[in-house]
Amino acid sequence: MQQRQLGDRTVSAIGLGAMPMSVPGSPDAAQAEATIHAALDAGVTLIDTADAYTPDGALGHNEELVAAALRSYGDASDVLVATKGGHTREGQDWGLDGRPEYLRTACEGSLRRLGVDSIGLYQHHRPDPDVPYAETMGALRDLLDAGLIERAGVSNADPDQIRMAQEILGDGLVSVQNQLSPRFRSSLPELEVCEELGLAFLPWSPLGGIGNAKDLGSDQHAFAQVAERHAVSPQQATLAWLLRLSPAVIAIPGASRPESIRSSAESPTVELTDDDVAALR
Image (cartoon, rainbow, N blue to C red; front, side):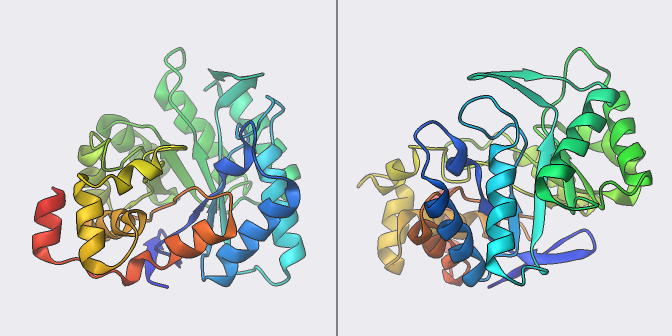
């Protein structure tokens, strides 16, 4: 598996987005475990989760699935688990809470569910318009200083917020997780900031989001046409395109079936030509 840099840590260029295992109608625990094990067998060393990924509003469902699967796998010491805090959940309603005291409580809950003393990568999930961003970033700084997290990241942040986070967190900030896919390209400015500051960029919903990945296979879709030329799936061509955009990119496609993550893990072997990239632009 191709490797990418995430701060001081080397991880696979393709990570596993675990969210689809914790949505209404999600697979049972056995299938979730099989999917995570398949990812590790394929060389995936980054798993992305969050306390708010849950089918019913009870925080922590996805984190608990990930922790259980890693325990049952055996030696998973080379796996970096990235989780997020800052979203609240009440049933199917998502809320925001960027207060420092809330982020500390959320982090402590994630530590318990993951069964670790320090979280490898802890990301603030989304800016709270009711709380100054500098205060929330200060809370992340406190978590770093306390040793509760090893690395920090931000998600759904704009260029100015990324720069503010870097000023406050320094080398502790290693990643940005924003939406980026063929149908959602407005995060390209944030990707440029990551390249400038030496941060990893983790595009969420890289295939278009739950239920939309199949649209990439439309006969008229440019990604389907490129995929046909390379005898790969449109989804594999899409992930290869994202990796080609920048060495800062670490793609985290969602998966809820072993075959899905196995296919995604093969995408770094797709060698797109300059003509392919021009067509996909």
